[in-house]
Length: 117
Image 1: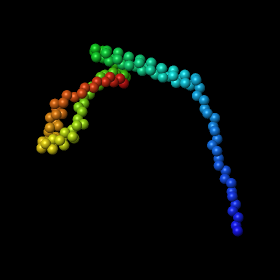
Image 2: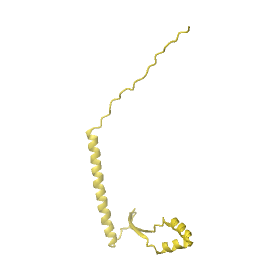
Image 3: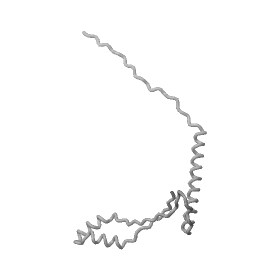
Image 4: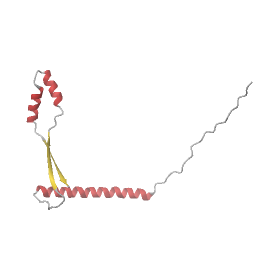
């Protein structure tokens, strides 16, 4: 009879690693940075509002590398167009012509932004 030899296996246990400590100084720094970011954001909003008001009142921008102007754009929302065309076809209408008439009579949405570069 052949003898069976049992070979013990070593199972490694995970080693516990020392936990890294987050210092109070690091937390205070983050809080301070967040507060400064909020203050700066408020200052930016205040300055943009002031420039916007002055430009609307007719102020002229000094000549130089930077400019400030209003950018105005108009947009018509026509996401309904394909549905409208299909419905018009079911009703035996010219869907494209109907949508063109609706679009022509739709008042565009006006968007104005202040661009400074």
